Image 1: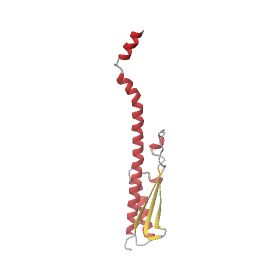
Image 2: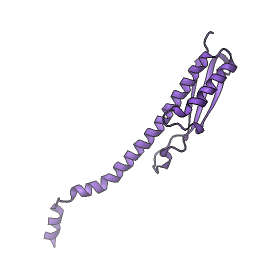
Image 3: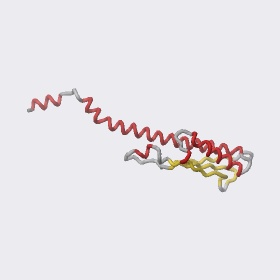
Image 4: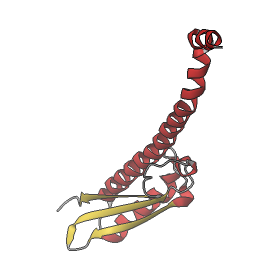
Length: 142
């Protein structure tokens, strides 16, 4: 009996298959997590860029009403053009910065709850399902 066990212990023909069976689920979990987090970070970057572009649009306005109209139209017409962004999930607040009328502030919020990161079952802390960025720009001509 001892001879049978010692021969079995030294047999290395299936070690690659055993290693594959042990490591493949871990690898797939890591790969899926990286892809899901990458999509989330891509959406966050798009929201940040959208917010900055909208704030720059405000420079062309002569008064607050025109700035609000320009920025609102930009956000409404272009939010869906940014990578990974669903325009229906975008909301925004625009206007002169309270306490400093020489600054114009744009805040964009994106409900990212439909991104695949929320489908993962990971023991990792997940980011907020609402991505929010604020961009402030100095009004031109002041």
